[in-house]
Amino acid sequence: MIPNRQGFRLYASIAAVGLFLTSAFLAAEVAVARGSEFVLFDVSCLDGATTCPAGLTPGGVARQTSARGINARGDIVGFYVDNTGRQRGFLRQDDHYTTIDFPLAGVRATIANGINAQGEIVGQYVLPINPDVAESSPLYCPQNLANGNANPACIKGFHLWRDEYTTVKFSGHPGAIPQRITSDGDIHGCIHDHDLGMSMYGATWRRSFGSKKSVYITDAYSLLPNGGELSEPMDVPMSMNNAGTLNGHSIVGLFTDMDGQQRGYVVRNGVFEPYDASDETVTANLTSIWDMNPQGHFVGTYRAVGEVAGRRHGFVDRGDGSGRISFDVTTTDAAGNTVTAFATIAFGINPEGFIVGQYALVAGGPLRGFVAAPPSGK
View: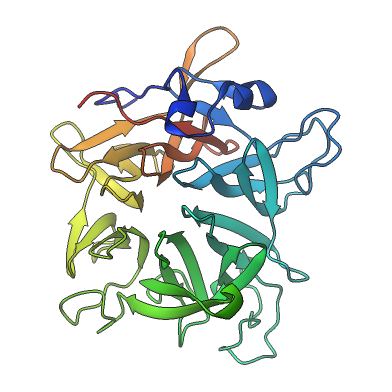
């Protein structure tokens, strides 16, 4: 276990800062447990409920839950795996779960990744196989890979607002994964072709509204050669833009360097800066930055040298030079013993500093969602 450099706490009255972690939330969910430092939860359906999240029955709990994004209001998005093994997106708002499935027959999976202050949601979905259309078509999906997995070109992005879906694509590339949307409509994510390796580049789109609030998504910039994101004409393959500040001056994400090591990055005013979650106590050999709030605080996950492949720790960095604050989800077992999660990943942070993510107690174990209050201390 890597100890927290700063403790995490849950406020006694979360309602005071306008978030959803009220006593009503805790009382209403049989699948919610309070750990020593976190609220842990699963997408679920109450006993006796007349309606349930898709694929669940009254009294049922999702096989897996991952919280991916949180806005200032405390609305949470992510994905869950239902009773049949299907992956579906969700929105948790006002003590209620809403299923998010991209509305196209045969869609194989949906993930909701980010939500902004207005309630606009972005994410990704996997199309059914359809190779008999042009690669530029939003319906293009070639045959599965040799290992049986979906071809990455089948992964498309979406924007959801007021029950209306818009597909998100980048010119000249069949695949896209939008991760975040800011309140002014910048959508950060990545584009790719038929792999999630050398053809994958961080990218940003802009959302605008037309008459009657119709939605338009246009390409903005990317980490492609001369993609406009960097002040120099360099490219950064195997990268993902995962979040940005409102003015677009700072963007965070992840990339794989020439030595094959996954690292985080911060782009400030067009200058690319690699980021590793290392300090005087820990040397990280894997780092991912997944979100950044308007104050420039960013969150992610890392693995330390000497740890097994699947091990992960969450972290938050205020971006002010004060250093990384690391944490692991902990809970209590039936015997009263403290159990530290094998893997903790922080995916989202809102303006108030509340963090959401996923954890697994053991290697290969089911995923569960968590919410953590802002770090205590300075």
